[in-house]
Image (cartoon, rainbow, N blue to C red; front, side):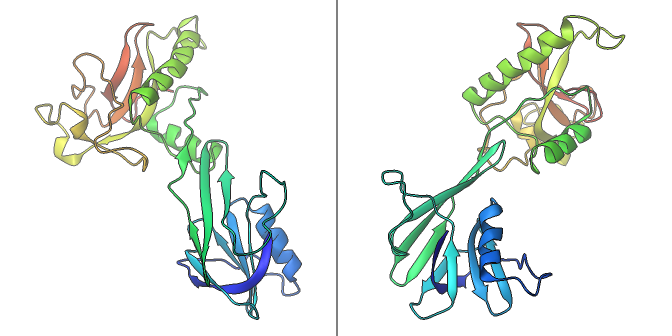
Length: 264
């Protein structure tokens, strides 16, 4: 933590993590920020320890005789030391099992600016059991730090997901699952049929244009949805969701299907 003098000046949000502890000290405040992965700034406010996570603070103003503020920045890789002063450029990141969120701290006297590009997502393909899309979404949220079902933005992402899904297909098709032999399986993806295309299979509702997406990292339109032949065909109605479906080792691709169907 880089501790100096100054105060936040442009911040859309913040929290008081030690509000329930009236005897908390500034050292306690520093420790909280150090241990909270998303925290990048803490300020010794008159109301207590004021904490800012990535995206919650834009600028702070340096003041040599003002209140105390602290930034979480990485050590200098070349010297393995903390920054020599509070006017140097700093950087850091917050990482979970499947996301990477970097940030930068720059200084233009007397203003520090905190910048954070969009988080980078690291997709995961999991096979717990057959489930509908609602259950798959809940598992993503609970098992992977509030994550959501991913979309496929390009050929590389499709190829990666297809290779991971093939492992699931090989496992499921190699024998009985419980007492049942499955002839196909699939992986739930981000994508919901729009109300304008519900029950309609004519152009433009026979393409990616029939679906809307929640994944904030997808391009518009996404270039990573490679359809099975003849898809999307609106079957089985209302065909309101999307899966990467496997019929065999060579026959796989995106298919539209009901959200209540059971896939991985």
